[in-house]
Every structure is written in C-alpha cells, then in structure tokens.
Image 1 (cartoon, helix red, strand yellow):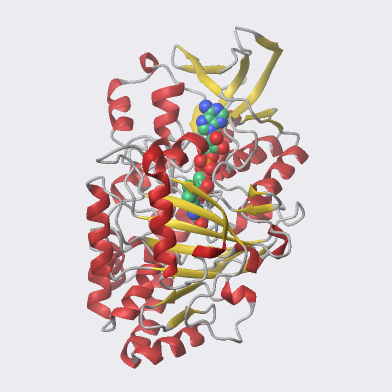
Image 2 (image 1 turned 180 degrees about the vertical axis):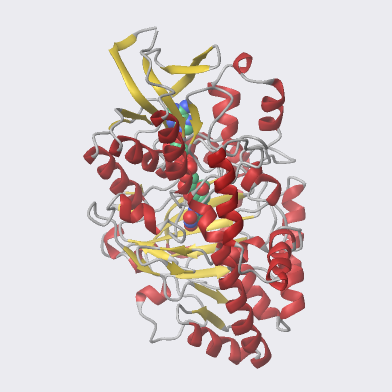
Length: 542
Ligand SMILES: Cc1cc2nc3c(=O)[nH]c(=O)nc-3n(C[C@H](O)[C@H](O)[C@H](O)COP(=O)(O)OP(=O)(O)OC[C@H]3O[C@@H](n4cnc5c(N)ncnc54)[C@H](O)[C@@H]3O)c2cc1C
C-alpha cells in the first residue's frame, strides 16, 4: 500500500454524484478541507451528459430536472456556474393508440381545457384534486431539507425539533390528515378509479407517476408519487416544476463541480475507493483500488447503502443487525434506458403541425392502469415484458447544441424490467430489450426505426456496472413507505450518521431519497457540520 503524502483531509466524499458534490460544497464552504473521489472518469454519477456517437451528447441516465432543490441552486449559485433550466411545457405528453395526443401544460387552465376534450366531469375533478394535492404537498415540503425527526431523542434540542415539526401540522384538519395518510399508504390505481371516469385521464396520471417504482399502480404506497411530484423545484420554486437542462443533465453536476472547486474542493476522477478504513468504530481514511491510502477526519459516502456497507466497510466493524437490515433493502431494478441518435426527428402521431420543437420534445408511451399492473407482474418473475412503458425525450429539440446539424438524440426511460432474468443473462438479452423499445416507439412514431444511427441500451446490469448502482436501482433503494423517512436507509439510522463515528451517508439511499434533488447531500453535510462544530472530530489523527 502506498500512502498519499502525510496530508489529513477534514472530509473525503466517496463518489461525485450530484449529492456527493453538493455535500462537498457545503463542507468546503464551512472551511473544511475536502476531497472528492470518483470511480468513473467523469463527475456526475447518474446526472451526466455523455457522448453516445461522434458529436452527439445525451443525458444517458436521468433526463428531466424536476426536483432539484431551489435552496441548493441558490446556495451554490449554480446559475453563475452555467446551469440553465427551461421549464418543460408541456410537462407531459401522451399519444394514445386512437391518434389523440394529450398535453399536460404548465398552465392549469390549459390542462383543464385538454381534459375537457376527454371528459368535462374529470376536468372539474382535476381542479378540486389538484388544489388538494398541492396543499398536502406543502406539508411534506419542509421535511425534504432536514433529517427526519429522531423519535428516540433524549436531548433538549431533539425535543424542541420534534415540537417544531408538530407545529407544522397545527393548521391541518382531520380530513386533510386522513387524506395525507391515504396518499402515503394507498394505491395510485384505487385513487384514480375513485376520482376519474375516463381511462385516458387515468392513463395521463399514470404517465406522470410511479417512475422507478417496484409495483404496479394498484400496489399500496404508489399514490405517494402524486405528492412527490408537486414539491416545488427549479430556480423559481414552482410546484410541479419539470425542466429541460441546457447541455443535458450533466450541466447540473458540471455546475456543482465548478462551484465545489470555487470553494476549494479537490476532485479526483478515475479514483475508485476500495475500502473505507475504520478501526474501533471510527472512520480514519480510505484506501483506493490502486492501494493509495488517504487519511481524513470525516468520510461521506455517496455510494448506495449496500455498496457502502457491504463492500467498502469491513463487516466486523458493523453491528450484525445493521448489516442484516442493509442486506434487506429492496433494490433490484426495475428500469432501463435506451438512448438513440437519429438521422431525422421522430414524428409522433397526433402532434399538431404548429407545435414548436420544445413542444415536440417529450412523449410518454404508457399502458393502461390494468396493463401496467400486468407488466410489473411479468417483470417481477424475471421476464422482459413484450409491451414496455417508454418515456421518450427528444433532448435535441429542447437543446439543439447537443447534436450536429442533421442529427437528433432521443433518450428513452423504460419500465418495468427485472434485474435478475429468469432465462439467460442481460448480456445476451440487451439488444432484445432495445428491439422491443424500438417496436413500441414504432407504434406511435413509425419513422424512428429506420432513422437510428446509434443505439445505447443500458440494462439494469449496465446501470450497476457503469454507474455503480447496486442491482441497477435508480434511487439507491426503492422509494416505498417502508424505506422512507425514519426507515431510510434502515430504521434507526435516518440521520445520515452510521454505526461508524465519522462516516455519513450522503447519497440517494439516505432521506429523502432518489431523484436529482441535492437534498441528501445538503442534509448529510449539515449533519456532519453540526457534529464537527461540537468538536467531535477535531483531534489529531493517531
Ligand atoms: C436511468 C435513470 C433515469 C433517471 N431519471 C431521472 C430523472 O429524469 N429525474 C430525476 O430527478 N432523477 C432521475 N433518476 C434518479 C437520479 O438520477 C438519482 O436518484 C440521483 O442522480 C442519485 O444521485 P446521487 O448523487 O445520490 O448518486 P449517484 O448519482 O449514483 O452517484 C454516486 C456516485 O458514487 C460513485 N461511486 C460509487 N462507488 C464508488 C467508489 N467505491 N469509489 C468512488 N466512487 C464511487 C459512482 O460512480 C457515482 O458517481 C434517474 C436515474 C437513472 C439511473
């Protein structure tokens, strides 16, 4: 083993995903000497823009910025570091097999007008339900940028925090409380069946929800997505914001890396961490795969909980029940991504001739509620469904700088596919998945198949191998109630601290979970800073 100089950093971040970079910014801004180590040769984790064919760049993994916390954008001055987001308008667009295209506009009156074309009763219900959902989402919003309350607290500050949290619900009526409980625990399918009459309207809501989730729309807990999507986002803090990022999603993490360097953070890429060195219950440093040892007072891991605690930390340093709980985190799949370069723009049926390129930049091909439920069941038993749920974004229509003239990029998020196949391997079935996605798209945009110049298929296994996502899970652990709030990453450890003093979890596996939010990174850094200020880690390293 070689030892990197005698330098002892105040903090090392394992991983340069957007949460790791956000955490690094906050720590360095507070004066801590901070080093970020990333295994890939680029920063960004699954918030990146990559070249998929000569001169053609795409958001290879995440593709829409809907939940990036406005506070993080402001604190890190990401605008000054080049971040520019343009609201998606429409935020959602669903072509139906009968040729109708329904657009979900940013302006509510326009959505109501679209829905009225399908069912006037549903259009009226939409207004009532939308008001209700927005109000309920506001109760949840403040929980995003702080650790979940510590129910076991014995300290005065812990009790006063619990009191503050309680006060947030002071104005809530009993009717709202029961609505909140049913959104947290109920199913999207049941909610839609109860409130809407038209299958098309229900499909529209389905298209806007349960991304990345295990479970069909009738599974308990799936209604929660309705609230999650109404948390505010974007620089202007708009409820239900959906944004195209100019330069692709990588522009977010490029801006964060630039902000981090500005605060004095050192970022090293192609530097995979093999081990988090902890002894006698205390983190002391990291060891890189090439054997280099680097010493530090704090370690924040941006890797997911399974990777962090089952691969990077020695099991003997952790309590057995903690390891058992980490092993039990539900991950396995269920998503994939297919990115394409095209020689002509996809022409989706039903698109009005007067739509501008931005309005022609997203199309969701979604099955009915009933069919989505079946697709999940097929995937659950290890098969690749014949009919897939495909969310297409034509990035080059939102930002032509992504491609040279005459080329277009389309990224396609695919749900549901298994991590573990029942027959064969993903290496054998990768192109089969790509073919099924193209077949699905051809039903709505027949010109696509013959326009493909390059195709990149990222199966759940590729998401694991390339992006470091255990079992390909896009959120570092399923977002179900059992794995949220007090239970994220596992019960008893939702405050970013871990059983090893000085080691924190700062990625999507921690509260409030996945998505490009910056929230876990922000919260973990603040927790570590609170401990730092109490003088916990200032002693010289032995
Ligand atoms: C296909 C796909 C589509 C998605 N679509 C969207 C979307 O449209 N909108 C949205 O908001 N969210 C989306 N998401 C989810 C979102 O991208 C993630 O939840 C979020 O980016 C996670 O960020 P993170 O910083 O916590 O972790 P990550 O982005 O996973 O970053 C972790 C980093 O740690 C590095 N790392 C791991 N182990 C080590 C090690 N041993 N040494 C050094 N480095 C290490 C990894 O290489 C990686 O760079 C999508 C995700 C995927 C995969």
